[in-house]
Length: 274
Ligand code: C2E
Ligand code: MG
Ligand code: MG
Ligand code: MG
Image 1 (tube, rainbow, N blue to C red):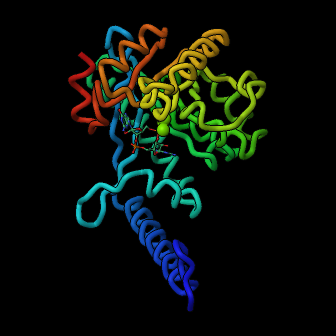
Image 2 (cartoon, protein in one colour; image 1 turned 120 degrees about the vertical axis):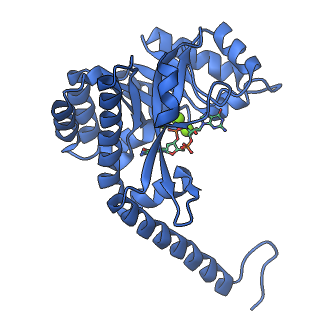
């Protein structure tokens, strides 16, 4: 069969598709197994203020491969979403993060809130707010110690249920942030209606901020808009001192990135509490 330059023959195309399908089947099995056998782990990445004091931490999911290697969430979260595993998995993440703060508290540490990522299907689950409330009550955990991160597009998938969940959960005292802010396409009007306290400027804007004709004006605008709306701003993906000092000058409130720390296992987070 003739092949167009740069294109793929139908046979090769179907071979690639089935390879993709095989890989996603493999990941699905790996995740189902991991859920039953403690194969998932939460890492924690510090979020600091301008004085580099620890203010909170983001919980980031890790999956161990059969060979002990770590699989990145950017590969398995999409498969978890399409296969439905995200619902039990998302519950596990919330419970695990809450158990972790509680056990740190009981060990006498000065804990900080943990931010948990909530997926589009999770925020659209009518039972989410009750599930979270039950978890907090069972652990006798202060809801102010749990933050939840949603993206603009995840809220837009089923806006009515999502908003209901967010209203109920923020009524309990849980704070919401909008993750990857600037990459979605929700309206400012929608943003204004959501019970959120924080915007997280997407890493892509931070990383291109220092370039000539870079994203500097966007970052300045997001920070001033957030402040005008009474929201605080977290810059994601801060990797250099230059970016950090520029963001400080711009009035950014909180910072997260490899400059300060990579995501670390729970045991390594303990010394950070001071
Ligand atoms: P996210 O929520 O935007 O998390 C931030 C990601 O940026 C993390 O990647 C983190 O390791 C990475 N990062 C932080 N600082 C830097 C930096 O300075 N430079 C660079 N290059 N990267 C930095 P990670 O852990 O691979 O997670 C990727 C995405 O997977 C997350 O993006 C989030 O969307 C999703 N994810 C992770 N854990 C969960 C979870 O428990 N539930 C759900 N639904 N999604 C999760
Ligand atoms: Mg996040
Ligand atoms: Mg993010
Ligand atoms: Mg991101």
